[in-house]
Length: 93
Image 1 (spheres, one colour):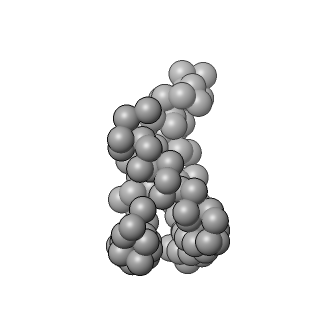
Image 2 (cartoon, rainbow, N blue to C red):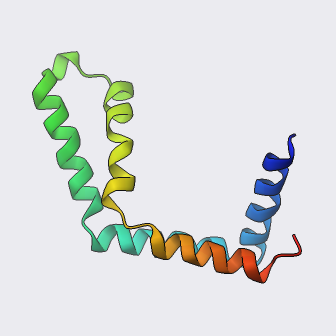
């Protein structure tokens, strides 16, 4: 395992151990709900199906075309700030 993967594994373990991971997941769910993310992604997928006709659409290509949308639709700054704060508090990882 390379050092980046090891560091990610350590950070993930620490997030799980102290409950911060669950809190971040809940924050993400709440923010996605607030900004109407699910409905916007659903509409984006429906538009993609209409453009290509349903018989020419696969789940894989619909997902690939929809992947850039979540980041564009969700303001990630608050979540990233919480992760940065967590990492600052646990700098001795």
